[in-house]
Length: 77
Image (cartoon, rainbow, N blue to C red; front, side):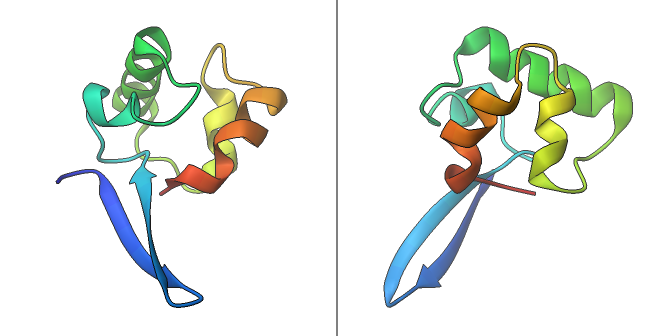
């Protein structure tokens, strides 16, 4: 599935959503990312290029510190 990065943490496999490659539907699998936010993320990366670090998502309109804290464990670049 495009847009998902998998890794092992303490023997368990975890999947994180890539902010740079995930499409709208995949982004919406992250708790707290609704359709409008997913579209804003895609529009942001189309205009400004790929995210360098996950904290850069707070530059997307509508995503600030509180929203970032809720999703930071589920996203990657």
